[in-house]
Length: 351
Ligand SMILES: Cc1cc2nc3c(=O)[nH]c(=O)nc-3n(C[C@H](O)[C@H](O)[C@H](O)COP(=O)(O)OP(=O)(O)OC[C@H]3O[C@@H](n4cnc5c(N)ncnc54)[C@H](O)[C@@H]3O)c2cc1C
Image 1: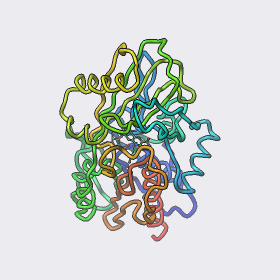
Image 2 (image 1 turned 90 degrees about the vertical axis):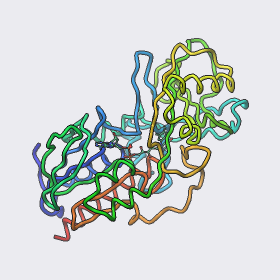
Image 3 (image 1 turned 120 degrees about the vertical axis):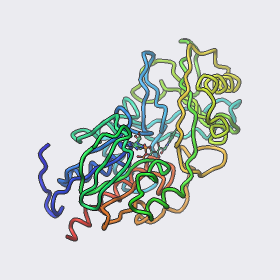
Image 4 (image 1 turned 30 degrees about the vertical axis):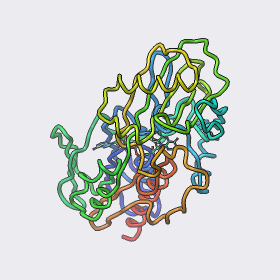
């Protein structure tokens, strides 16, 4: 990879970004575009993190983030740019059946096209990345950090390290910077069991999405109603944080069966051809006792200052970003990743 230095970006340094979700990729992209040398690590097989799509022979399922909503002007502009590039499109689902309750509250937003993962894939283009690599520890010192994988592989030396993983996974990586470690260790993240359901063809649904008023389901979405998808009769069901926590160690088969039973009772859907469950152990920062704030409640809370959006220890050359620093949404992750890149580049310009 040839790295050229952007005017005003200071000298080129070599950065490790741990985590290739929206926050890590946004940060990595900004540093790379400013001429810095960046290597991205992720334990998964590809980019996206919780902005994710599962492909199956029976169609694709957006089984992580459902919609992107902008509450701040910079992300509104980013969504407009992605829309112009054909990476996102608006989705306005018809609200769900009264039996599911809360029928009017099936909000839409922007979704990736043709899959939710389109945006994170685009952000990763051109970046040097090591997939399937779980970073287990950071050793060394500022300007000479060494990363080691969970199987003991030396992952190389870096001037600085930018940790972009959920708070409980960030804390053990931040032992060298106690203030950052305790900030991450103090954050509680809640799980979300998600079921991917393939119905027989032919069941016609006059609605596309619902946020049931009571658990165990918090969200139901018809995949074919999302822009640019095929006609495959796939549905995504998400459980409430409370139910997910209570069933955290249940088998995927038993979770899928329980969520499908509720889905069928609330909607009249036929028995599926198949259903599988995926556990998001760290789905979102604890916010609402009943449901994930996805998409965020109208109006949201007061926006934290941008200085809270990321944490950067310039002396140690270690930083942290991720949705959990701001809230439970894709926008929060994007803002956090952008803020960390800005802090890093400001430090370089300051000499
Ligand atoms: C089921 C569900 C529904 C959601 N719905 C919505 C929604 O509708 N709207 C919305 O705005 N938000 C929603 N969200 C939240 C949204 O997905 C997140 O806020 C956002 O994607 C977080 O991005 P991130 O980069 O901070 O973290 P992540 O996406 O979690 O990225 C972190 C990455 O780090 C990797 N990683 C972790 N530890 C290591 C390690 N040690 N070494 C290497 N790699 C590591 C992980 O594999 C992952 O790829 C939802 C989330 C879930 C789970």
